[in-house]
Length: 88
Image 1 (tube, helix red, strand yellow):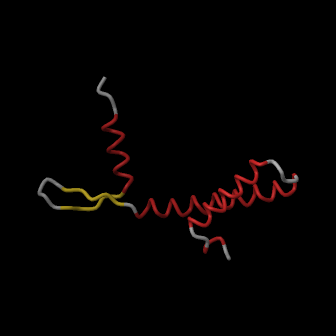
Image 2 (tube, one colour):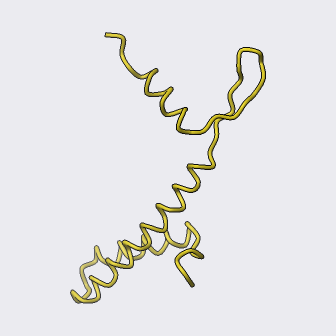
Image 3 (cartoon, helix red, strand yellow):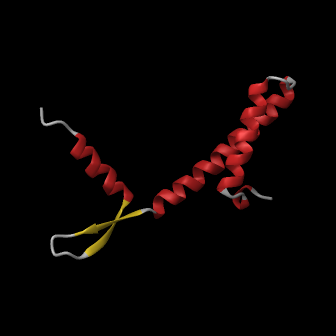
């Protein structure tokens, strides 16, 4: 199975298994290094899936005329950042 075919849930599940195994400390150094490398690959796969999902997320906004439109998630972050700023 190629990296591109691994679903997010499977990659995350495998990453959790790897972390648990590495935390146990019962592996030889060489096996630990191989598992660590696999964990890095699973992390990259998860990150790629999350980045793709973030691109698809949109916010439904009602304008002044009462019409709905879609805005990318990035604009939501900018609006939230501006609202969170203190006036003093």
